[in-house]
Image (cartoon, rainbow, N blue to C red; front, top):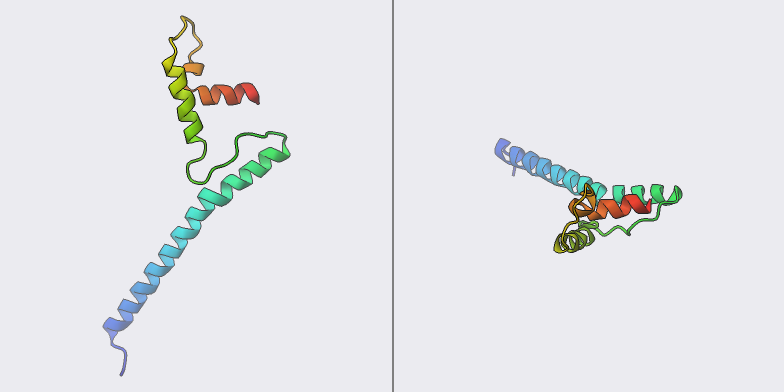
Length: 96
């Protein structure tokens, strides 16, 4: 049984899709797992020990909790807006 041009085209398309999906998986793993680990290691060597990295979500939960607590309190009449708008950033800046 010989291969028809249609069968060859289908195999080429399937191989192309498989190659593309492999590239997407590698790129995603690099962005979501490897790169943050490299950043954490670089910061650790510089003496900056922050929050531990959590796969995929990062520090979103802690930031949301801090934001909720900041918005629950009444705001003082001042120009200190960062602690109200982005308390996670404010705490990190004060800490480091």
